[in-house]
Each structure stands twice: as structure tokens, then as C-alpha cells.
Length: 335
Image 1 (cartoon, rainbow, N blue to C red):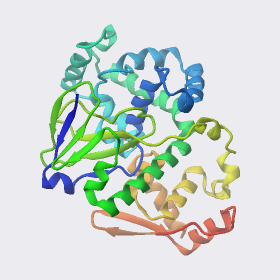
Image 2: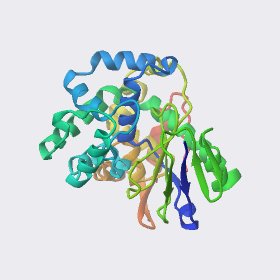
Image 3: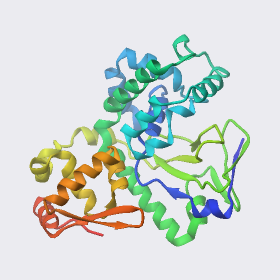
Image 4: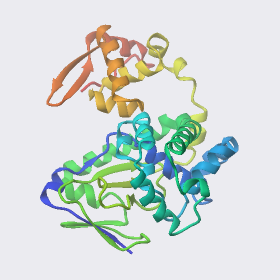
């Protein structure tokens, strides 16, 4: 059965590919995978390690809300998660009672819902957000660099498709089950048959490491439209991450600046806004702004306003520092 996504002229102009992973979408989709047995070649080692370390309390809270098949509540993936894990968890804690009731009714229509989940109040949401944060730290955080590398490779491919074929090239090449027949993007292989009208809101395309089979979207048409699609995977990625040396040994900048600011400096080497940096580092915009202020005061980066954003680039000193820190002695590419 298909989902038909209807575009208008404004929607085409406002369609974009997310610049970084969405931590709560990755969390939800990884929970789906954790409860399955398929895809052992790619995800087997990750499943084995994660299952062996997963606390029973986290399992009991999250598994009932994230079944491997069928509906998962929309409130588990708020749009604020695009700004990083902290922003997503805060939005989860502030979920309205109306949203909770609507989503839980939909979940209960297809499966048993635990007693504790039938009337979740503020304290329940706090526990749930804490469990999501703990799970993310255990199951995803140790593999961030590998996951991010796959997503950045996909984003580069999407940019090339956009350059060569425009929006049509971008939409038609996302996934074998997606076909673009203007003005409709049709998603086949789903369990529902419905139409999704964008009404000028555009479509946020989110590449996902843990989306294994078919692209997915939110159930509620009133929410900001999003389409999450799987990226290409490499087998052995979990073992490759395990073999990595500690970052502080790999990158001398980390010993000088700290791991987070060293990662920020490397991100700025390609040019980025504060929001993009926050998503890349998986921190709040305020935290990212603090890091850029420290780097700017040290003379390592420069910042200038471009429209409604502040864009950061390397200064001469920052470029020299990265050049000295590079294993090859070559400066990282700058924008």
C-alpha cells in the first residue's frame, strides 16, 4: 500500500535534507532494530553489545512504546530534535496531554499498552526522557563517528543529485520504494494507504543510519512533514568503531582544547552556522554558541552574520593549529 505525498510549488522550494543526524529518530529506529533479528550482517555485533548492557528498567520503559512493527508514538520524535539531543529531550518532557492521549490511543489500537503508559503525566514524561537519554548514551553515543560518517556520505550524494537533476533528481533517487511523478512522491511498501498533503510546509528529508528497510514518516498530518530514509551501510562498522584509538590520542587538538571544542574547530574548518555546529556536536545551540565564543576569543575562528545566521570560519591561527594536528601535516579543507 502506498503513501502519496503531495507537493505544491512552495513545498518544492522548502524541501531540504537535514544537515545532521536526528538523535531521537535514530534512537527510535535503533530500538526497532534492537528487537528484531534481521540484518545480522550489518547490525548483529551492535545488537549483541547493546542487549548485553541494556538495563531492564530502560528496556521496560522503551520497548512497549517502540514496537519493531507498526505504529510508534509521534511524540517520541519531536521536531526540536533537529537541534540536538538536549533540545529533543526537553521537547519530549513538555509533550502536551492532548498529544499523549492521541498517540497512546493510536498505539493501543494495534497492541497492548502497559498500565503505566495509559496516563503519562509530567513525572512519567521525565522518567521516559531520562530513559531515552540513558539509552542514547549506551547504544548510540559510542558509535557516533561511524554513524555520522555514513550520514555525511549520504548528504554528499544528495547534494550531487540535486546539482545534476534538481529537486526531481533528489526525490527520485532517495530509495527504491520512492517514485516521483510530479507533483506526487509515492512511497510504496507501507502498511497504510493514505495521502499526505504538505500545504506549503515543505518536506524535511532525514537520512538515518538505523532506518533499515523502508522510509518512514509521522502519522499525524498536522505535524511538520518529515520523511526519514535509510542510508547505505557497511558491514563491520561496529567493530571498526571499537578498534578506534581514544580521540585524545588521535587528535592533539583534543588535549589542548578538550574533545568537544576540538571537534567544533574541525567542523568550522568547512564553514558552518551555530545551528549546524550544534547538530553536529549534538549539543544545544546555546552550548555551541559558547564554544564558538571561546574559540573566537582565542583567535582560532572568525564569525560573521549572514542573514539570520552567524557563520563561522577558521582564522589563520586555527588553520595553523589544525595543520599541525593533522597526521599528514596537511591543513584540513576550508570553505
